[in-house]
Length: 187
Image (cartoon, rainbow, N blue to C red; front, side, top):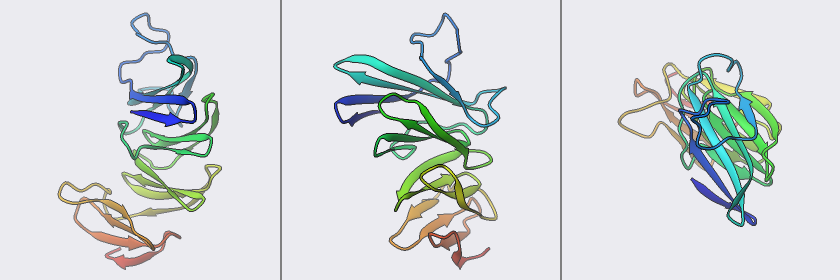
């Protein structure tokens, strides 16, 4: 994924084979950030490079050790001068353009699939939970269904004007408000 930010190009890529200090690495990232409890088996690694006039001027790699994630259009966002991105079970917030770590927060016990802006806060679609974080990465609330928020047949997470629609793996539907309270559903 390539994103234009001011006069910079930001490139975000999956780096599943990146090993710290390995001579096999094609590129060496200048900063390495680990998710919560990522001291052993790494399951996800996402590289971030900031380009100016065709040259990499800042770089970092973020790593997590719970569920596997990939880079997609909803797994990150630019919010003012910050890159907020999902990696495994953790949301990372990096300053732009220098990619310094501002905060990180475990937003799901397994995997964070997507992140969205909701007023001044963030909504995280996780495998087990929906989490609302404030701008500083603190958890405001979390909502958990009867099963994982993954569906093979339909959309499992959708933000409406006044609510969040969810479907779990057992096809149970939930409708919650932006305070994490259930409006409709089987829970």
